[in-house]
Amino acid sequence: MYVFSFDIESEIAHFRDPFTHSFFNTFVAPPPHTILGLLGNCLGYNEVDTERLGENIILGCIVIKLKGYLKDLAIIENQKNNQRTKTPRTRKFLVNPLYRIFTFSKDFMRLEKIQYSIYHPKRVPYLGISDCLACISNISNILEAKRIQTNEIESLINLDKLNENKKVNTKFNTKIKDPLLLTVYPFIASCPTKYILNNNGRSPINFHRILMSVNCIIEFKHPLDVYQINGDKVFPL
Figure 1 (cartoon, rainbow, N blue to C red):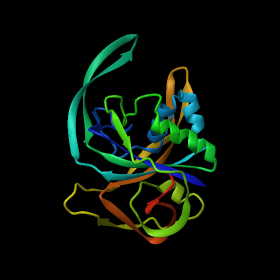
Figure 2: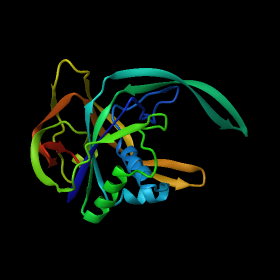
Figure 3: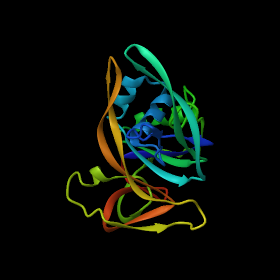
């Protein structure tokens, strides 16, 4: 298994929680399919090719920092009975988030192509929605991913993958990394990992439980199988 990583940040970001409607809440980190969309956007892929890409790569993410939140009023247009109505909705944004994204694949040449697109994106990268233009930095070399076991991890964790092959004790303790920085304690986000494309657009399927946090180290009772890349311990999403 090979891997490379890059850092991505923006002034604001929004990763909408699909279960919120009257108030558009945001996850603190990009869900797996949002990361896949980011890579597909840099490659210049359409939605079909992006979904196919997801069948050949594995993703990972660490929240490096988050400075805060802000709220904005968005005008949402809905269509019902052949009529379009505009409705105001409050939307939550993340302020100055910074993430480290990891892309894994057994195909070295595929990773080379993705890495090149990160250096030379065919479309402007953004975090969540197109209002949130992003800056990419610290693109690593392609390395062979080292598999290790550890009790402590700070990346996003896919709890459903954790229980895929065997029952694992998912109880954990939380340690704060820096008491002076903004902290979001671990919470479980239900996120789609795949979309079905149809004539009416696309529909989310295959929801997984993703454990997210900011400025926290998650300490499990039993060690987990993760990848170690340049000192970072990453759970494959």
